Image (cartoon, rainbow, N blue to C red; front, side, top):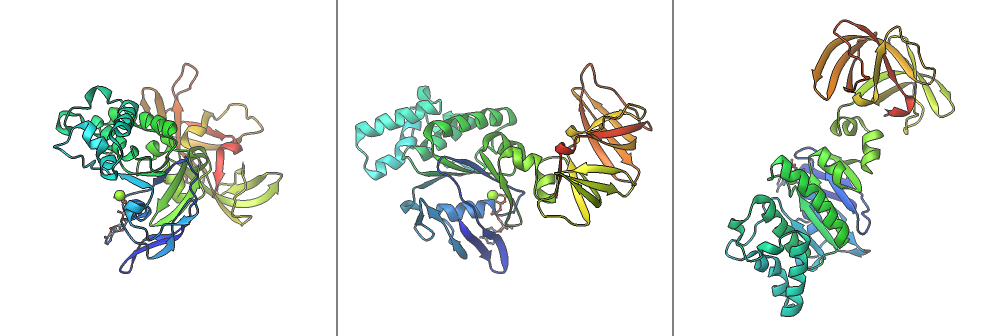
Length: 352
Ligand SMILES: Nc1ncnc2c1ncn2[C@@H]1O[C@H](COP(=O)(O)OP(=O)(O)OP(=O)(O)O)[C@@H](O)[C@H]1O
Ligand SMILES: [Mg+2]
């Protein structure tokens, strides 16, 4: 996609999207409600004309091709199966219209039904299937004519949590088997991270960051990405020195800590972040380890919830830091009012 833009009157729903998707890739468009995910998908599918920009498929400009002329299929949130047709007939529908020969058609439908785990149910009607099974029929129907790209718009959102998790793994497995490029829309960050090769994070029509799940989580490029992909503590300070591949930053409370450099380049003030699970709490009197950052604080909230505990620490400059500790036989507990050392590895932080 190059410069892809969609305006509804004055409102810019999709704003200058530039994104190259590799063949066979599983990429997610991730972002909050209204950020332009569906509109982007509809332009790729040919259901919506862009206001500006172009879409290419294997180098060919398909921007204004009608949907049926593109090698692209869509699975919508409401799977829209034909109620009066059996599972087999639903899957075969597109092939029949294309006039594929009967034997070939049966072979392909059988293979797809098996792949999505519906072999035993091919003669049932949609109403005789569970939500997850209906979803699989929709998937098989969209894959049976071997599109180059499959677009999926929140296809799992109607399923309960357990089934949804199971379908996430299955969908990923099926995608690997068929090798089709999947563009998957979701507003669920965990879902995007579990399934995708790359995640494209969107906000207000714009692409905030594109990268592997590890990169967007561990090294978010913007404050929005940092916050959308999970809890993040953001700290602010003055850059006072650059030493090797570290910057030394002075916090408002006077403590000096080391951070990774910001991709934006050297500036006087820096915002940097640390995920709550990457911080350790130690008693204030504990021996300091030279390589780690160490900042003193006071516990203002401690919540125990079985497998983990969450603490909120107040630093000298008034910043509140959230810390998430897995509970093990070795983990220490801290109570409200206690003075602690807040410790983290500079490598575990990210700079904005
Ligand atoms: N046909 C339309 N006319 C006017 N505005 C529209 C139209 N379609 C979408 N929009 C607006 O464009 C923005 C993006 O909509 P879109 O459906 O792409 O969001 P989304 O990211 O898919 O959200 P959700 O997660 O809620 O499905 C929204 O503010 C929406 O109101
Ligand atoms: Mg949508």
